[in-house]
Length: 453
Image (spheres, rainbow, N blue to C red):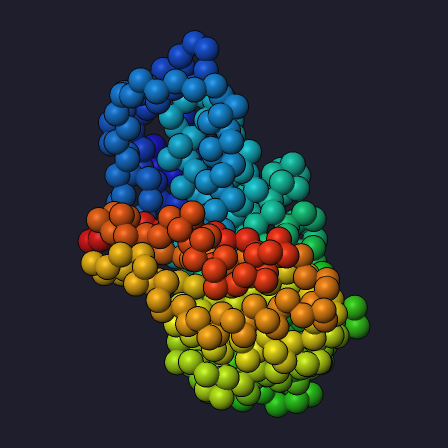
C-alpha cells in the first residue's frame, strides 16, 4: 500500500489483520496482529516493513512479556516526554504492535505534523485532507519542518486561522535563502501560528539576523525560544530593523552557540523581560554577549542555567557578574570537576537575598582505569572550603538546597569506576561541612551509558 509523503497521521479503525496509517514515503506489507487476553503483549508475527524514507526496517519478533495496558501506556508517555518534536512519527513503530498500543500512539501522533523533504504539491495534498476535518486540525499541537523550508510558505498561507491549538513550531536543518519565501511570509506565519508559545530552531541558516527577528516577532503568543547552532549569512543586526510588537512576552530562552541571538535580544530590549535563561557556551569570546544578556534581564531574571566554556578555569577567563540579577532564585552551573574556582568567583558576585536553589553539575567523560577517589581529588579542597563559607553566610538565609551532582558519561565497561552515591555523599560532607550540617546539601550521581560504535 502506497502512503502519502508527509508526516501527518491518520488513525483509522483498527483491524486484526492489517493496520493503515499515513506516514512519509512508506510502503508497508500486511501485519498479522494478535491481541492477547488480559492486557497488551509483544506477541506478533510480521514481515519486515519499510517505515521511513531511509529504508529503515522493522522486524518484530515473538515475545512473551505481558504487562497491564496501563503500564505500557506509561512507558509510551515516558518515551514521548523524552523525544524531540521530529521523532514523534516513530511512535507508529510501536503503534503496530497491538491494539492497546495503537490507541495510545494514535493519541500522540494526531498531535503532530511533520514535513521531511516534501514538495509543495504534497503540502497542498495534506492541506486538502485536513481542510474538511476540524477535529484533526484542532488536535494538532506541534508542526515540525525538517530541511525543506519551502513548505513553510504554502502551509502557513493555507492553514491561516485553522490550527487553533498548535503550541510548538519547530524548524530543523533548514537553509533559508534570501528571497526564497513569499514577501508576505511573516503575515502568513502570524495568521497560521497565532497560538504558538514555543519556537524551536536547530541547525538553521537564516539570510540575516533581521529575518530571524521578524520570525520571532511574527508569533504573538511566543513565550519560549530554543536555538542551537544557528547561522546567519548577514550576522550583524542593525538596531531598528525589527521592532517587537507591544505585548510580546518572551520569557524563556535556551541558547547554544547563538551569539547573534543574544545580541538581538539585547538590541531590541526583549531581554528585559526574560525570566528563565539557559546558556550553553563553547567559546571564551562569548563572554561579552553573555554578560550583556544577563545584565539586560536584570531584576526580571529568576533562574539561570549556564555552561561556561571548558577553557574557563578562572573567573578572568570568562568574567560573569550577576550583580544586577537581584531577583534570581535558582542558579544551575554545569562545568568540569576541576573548574570549581570559576564557580566560586561567580557565586561571590551573585545577589543572595532571594537565591533558594543552587545546582552544581560536574561532568566526567571516559573515567579511565582509576578508582573514584582519583576523581574526588580533582575537586579542589580550597575551592570547596571557600564555597562552603560563602553559601553558609547569613546573607544566604533563603537558600534551601545546594545540589551537587556528579554526571558520568561512560561506556558499559566503565560502570564499576563510577562513584556510588554513598561515597560521593561522604566526600561532599567532608568538603562542605557547614552546608551538610545545615541540611541543604543534596548529593547526586547520574550515569549515562554511551554505546561505542
